Length: 492
Image 1 (cartoon, one colour):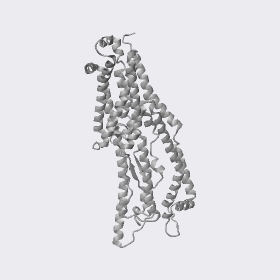
Image 2: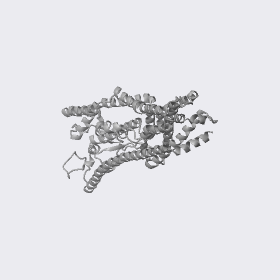
Image 3: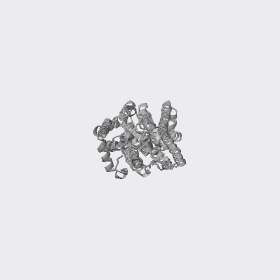
């Protein structure tokens, strides 16, 4: 009987223009979202590649200069010397022999590679740079270009497949299910249908299955096409594991909205009333609650003003310039292994810059920690309140699956900061000891290699959101089928 009813419902739906209009809009939305997401990821990758290529080119020029200088010294039998900072052009050793110049005036870009599904959920990656410059400057120099407060992007958000699934898919589902029973009841055909050997529960389940099969086939099918079109790392098993998780999350989220439509239908109200109620619930769960949770997080745990960082850096720099001698003494007392041989202290520009940078870093460290703590508090609050809205759970789940979550980006920042310290130590020790860089030393420069999180770690964070969606779906699914016992078949 189920198969017969489902077949009949499917044929009936196929003859309605509304279904084809909804499916056309859904396909267009998925296609455009895939294009927009793919373009965003391509733009990020190109920006990172251009930045890396530029800095590598600058160091390559310096290396060529040192190779020419080394050949000249070998031919003349002279001494391979350390270059002073900005000496007269054409005289003396090239600047490429000065570790301070190479480490400070060129940067090694640290890059967060996208996952295979990054284009399906942009997350916060449109306001958080996935490539940062590591040099002998301060941490502020490294992160000052992060667009963490981009007003346009924060206001509008990215248009990606995650947006289509979270915001638009529920609308399409509710448009096809708001009158499951009410339309039959208003036409007077419900009693005639139930006169046959079919229960109300079987009828409702069959109608839902017919509609869900059509919509979810389109979503999953075109989601797969989007992955094949704009996805990356398609030859890696992890990409397909993540896509399987994406399908599971999408099915759970869709099941919630189908079950919600059934729940509203069992109260026996008119189609217009059902549509109004479902529209109101969508507005509350998808728009109002997420906005309130975000507002609560930023109100209770506001991020320190970025201007505070800039002011603190300038004050520390000014204080260091006023007390050059004491700043240098303090720097060498903390870096005894880098004190030059002999009694005379180094007093050139880059040495003082190193001392000032150390003072600035100390002054800014409390503000860095405050930024980090507030960000963690905000994320923790959203994690705790995500169960108030399936839209929040779904957004967190899709960001985690696509590798655009806040946790993954924070892990990238931690690795980037550690690499900046390695870069600084490598060049500072050689510069302060006046050890000239030779061409072979360029092969020994520190290089950044992102260490990806294990899939187990990702699944651990993802489990809370998926478990919440599963519990909500189970509750909303069971309630309407229990309430069908009291459904009034006759129109009142």
